[in-house]
Length: 375
View 1 (cartoon, rainbow, N blue to C red):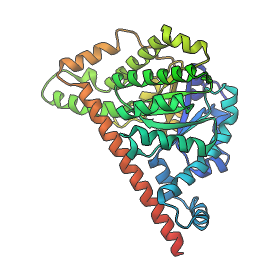
View 2 (cartoon, helix red, strand yellow; view 1 turned 120 degrees about the vertical axis):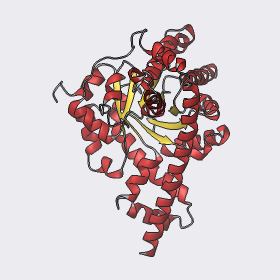
View 3 (cartoon, helix red, strand yellow; view 1 turned 45 degrees about the horizontal axis):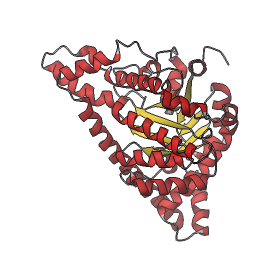
View 4 (cartoon, rainbow, N blue to C red; view 1 turned 45 degrees about the vertical axis):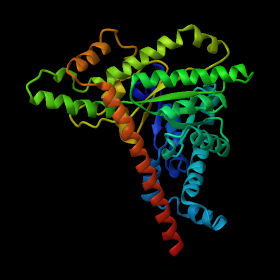
């Protein structure tokens, strides 16, 4: 494979590329193994919308649904879905097992999300996360937990229990700081109990393009009013992420983290999510190219993955120069645009969107089950 492959170049620069996609034939066809071998793919993420499309757009799951119904005629739709998802993720985890071993548990992870309707219930989130962790039975599984206030409590407890967590729906620097602190407290609790912490990993999934979509809409209103704000269009999400990375670096150089590192702890890497471009005026890989840095992860949906492979440019962009990010956010504040209010709203909308996607997924599974039963 040519060293001009930007996916391999990103890996050489210290960034792990994961795949934001799953479908059973990704594993059974050998495609996933090929992506690992040729492009250095290092992990995989899933969500209800991805599973919904996989099940509704194909007949790949029909026989498994039929057989599961025969084994358990009274199985609930949610349990049926999780059984399908667990089987897919077990297959993917096994294919990534050599990556997991080769990187000493740094990469090679697959991610499964707890039910989104538990986003504001820490106890229920912990209960389901532990259940899913036990059912999948793979060391390279991450459980996705949203970064709500309840989620922060769950992240700390699950880390202490030995569960690797993919923290999702992160939009603000302040919430990221709370998430990283929760991860460290969980490790400290586990270490105090005399348990191994070297086999725990975590990523903090920081959402990118949704921030620009929300901020740019307000900036374009200001443009129509004659204000000079064009230099901020498409810049705030990247600046927000740059400051998060700076906090990550500061924390990892601090005494509290160094104590954990001495005991074998892995850093909670920032994972750039929602890096597909939503504004057609922007370069389709702008968020991928702008956020390449050591000890980061980027999970790419297939279209963005192929675009970056085709014409992406990989070069180190993080850490960003100190004079770049903060002034952009200050300029936004000077305009009277409150980024915290925006990110709070994005979190609420994100949780609801995940709930809606999960509900739609269950409707898809139920409809498929009824169709198969009728036939």
